[in-house]
Length: 399
Image (cartoon, rainbow, N blue to C red; front, top):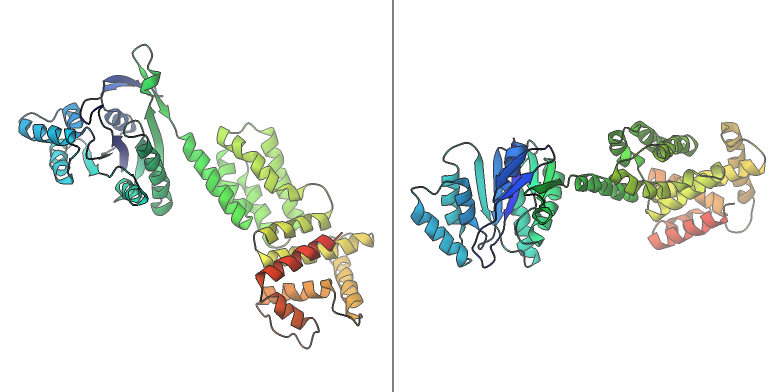
């Protein structure tokens, strides 16, 4: 099932009429009408037209345009008077809706909405757009008519609709009357806004948790291997930053060499910026950059985990070993731990970092078998600001 959502505007003095126009759609078809929503419904093959308008919108013109006034002149006169007085009621619209629907060719839904002067009224408009539409429907939006702010609210409602119900927003139409030339008015498809919205949602999700797979479906849409991003996200989540960076680097190189859609081209630099940790430096540097990224996201477990691994990688490099060999990493970890354990003074950062990683992984923040670091660890995990500051200082010390 498909529904076209359209708005009905006001005439110059509250009543009046839309001028007829010959609307040329992107598929080359032409429809002549005074109310663009009817033409958009024909082209999109929408089974339902949901018309939203205020108490002063030109409901009488809609009735005339659809040609259903014969035998109902008195009702039309009453409606026209209400339009002129800015006093149309939902009961009047219900009666008009019955007239429009009597031929059964297409179902009309006429909804009275407020002018949207304040937040409460704006929310009521959102409800008018979304009520009764579910995941099984495809929705088209026409933003041609009405007060300038109402189509903006309609677009916001359409995004809310998709997020709340999963209904597919199939297209956005705008009849650009001001661009009429040679007797024809071009119809613009604003579907690119949908693509931009998808990228915005993906970017917001990534900013929140650092999961590259947020972009994987968008990569697939660009004919790029979204699988690389899914793999990069998985590998990073299991602390295999080296392999994850290779997958991520492959994905970003493809972006640089492919022709992208306008929306993808807009967001590609932002994705490049947020994946800069993969570039340059050694494994220790990449792990440190990841730890800093996760610290900014308040993901303290992963920040601690990558800080710990970065410290171990740096120690392996200092001994001219390969940090990707397990035995090398185990030996470096043991040496770092023993060196600090032998100190008589307060426990060093590496011991605390290791114990903190274990504590966060297991959810155990209490004393750890008499470890002298346990008191400080318990204090550290009881205050977020102190934990953030300590991790930031520890990361600065990793070379």
